[in-house]
Length: 343
Image 1 (cartoon, rainbow, N blue to C red):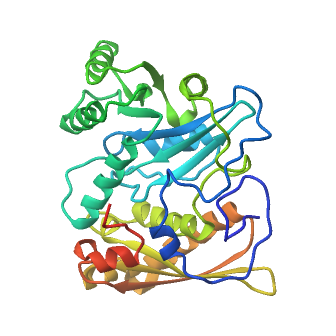
Image 2 (tube, rainbow, N blue to C red):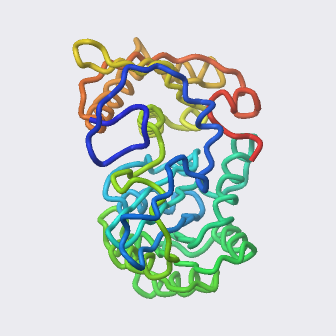
């Protein structure tokens, strides 16, 4: 089981009965500041640690790569771009190192205040990072999005750039693939580069080895059993949003935000979760509910199954849909939903 009030852990811990809203704690969160007491002891001589900013244009496989490196799912993955909205910490601890990954939203041309927030989050992750992990889609030639990301990386002047050419299995023509590789490698002055199939874990061990090589010596910033700094209720919200992204099309998934209103352990051991999906228009609400409630039932069922698999507890999910008009362009609404507009 997983503790709802602590960062996500690989080890089991006890759940507590607490429905306290975590928005303010989340808004105050800074990935480069850690609430845990830094552990300078109990680490071997030469122990390495630091922060790795994972950047790239939308839909190149950043979240999939993070999940593969950590060894379990902490970031949602869908075929749609701009899936990641919040900056997540993924933590890989070994005896010799602790690598803290910042999984960022894809850098894109923003069309709303939410879009501005997502881009600012990605850009801020480049600052103070010990390593930049630049992820590209090797099955395609670089586009303007790739070039924009590369320019931002170059302007940040990180000491170490590890360039991961992902999705190499999707390149159909070997000659075109080689051209793509050369074109991507010309974008930045990378320290090292790698090929990867993140969905299958191919190339991951080589990337981890390079990360350990380039991280500076340092302490453990988080307990070794932690794999993320997100609380369970935040992960639960992302799981629900993932199903919305997978099951709906057009503007609906990107106009949806999930708020976990209650997370309670009942006396029978079942976890009660009350969640609200906010959309911007009545038409979007109607699509999410579906004819006779069919769509919201499907979203709820799939979300519940995924949450139960994650927390290893039976779940009762109370899922509702409400309209919060134009929330993506409303700073108060963005803050209420956990997006730090002052970044």
